[in-house]
Amino acid sequence: MPTDQQLAQEDIATQEVATQSGSMRSDGGAGFSIRDLNVYYRHLHVLKGLNLDIEPRKITVFMGPSGCGKSTLVRVLNRMNDQVDGFRHTGQVLLDGKDIYDRDVDPVLLKTKVGMVFQKPNPFPISIYDNVAFGPKIHKTYKSKEQLDDIVRQSLEKAALWEEVKDRLKTNAMSLSGGQQQRLCIARAIATTPEVILFDEPASALDPGSTAKVEELMVALKRIYTVVLVTHNMQQAARVANKVVFLYKGDIVEVGEPPGMFENPKSELTEKYISGHLV
Ligand SMILES: Nc1ncnc2c1ncn2[C@@H]1O[C@H](COP(=O)(O)OP(=O)(O)OP(=O)(O)O)[C@@H](O)[C@H]1O
Ligand SMILES: [Mg+2]
Image 1 (spheres, rainbow, N blue to C red):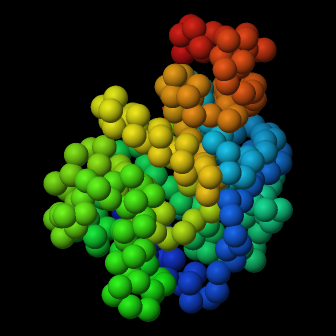
Image 2: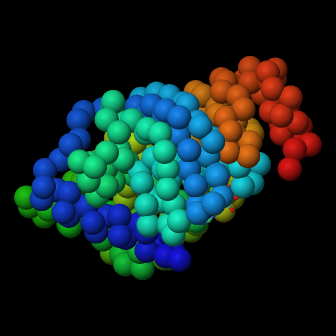
Image 3: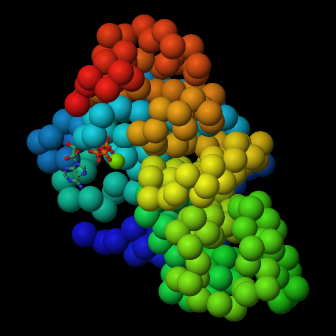
């Protein structure tokens, strides 16, 4: 099983091919339409006929008990499950109207549009600067050292980390705190100019102060990008979500908007989950 760090490195590394074969990127955050999606790991039916729209430049939050399929669903959105043994799907996952699983879609190209931030911060054990410059260097998306410096600075600014690291860009990224490392990973994702950023429990390993920073950041990022967030934290969902999707055993039980969905859930299952009576 590759680690999240290896997956991230592969993701960025494989984007070189994508850049060489031309970009399918358009301006602004893109939206997803999921139609009749079933996902299986061998004989295990994990996602069961899902239909869902993920709106551009909004924060869509996936919630539900452990094992209900949140990570599977979020990973389907940038084809990160393709390499998983026994993974298969039926149905459609449309990004701006185009099925990302169509034969003529290069999964490598897709990953230039849909970035991912993992639960555990996974910076590369190189300098802060080189972490952010990693993707642009592979893509060769800059013409001069000054331009690369600009990309690195702007990405760190957008990730609300610049002020804390501007005087130690050559320091190894592993010397940063967990919260800073997570913001560095967000800066690394931003540096490759995605349209969608997927966050799978990005703050669950962070202290409350760092969590607040990551939350503020997600709210700021949705002005530019489409954001999808998996979280177990109800308060966090209530603070940042435009739309909450509640999953249970591979089904979508309820889709709603906070705070209404938390105060007055339509489904009994959602209510039980919110009150901590659903495992
Ligand atoms: N690589 C895999 N191979 C086989 N089964 C898997 C794999 N990954 C997940 N599963 C199974 O698919 C189901 C959904 O798992 P998933 O990781 O999507 O749940 P989750 O909602 O993210 O849970 P958690 O809140 O614990 O992270 C579970 O039954 C899990 O055991
Ligand atoms: Mg998960």
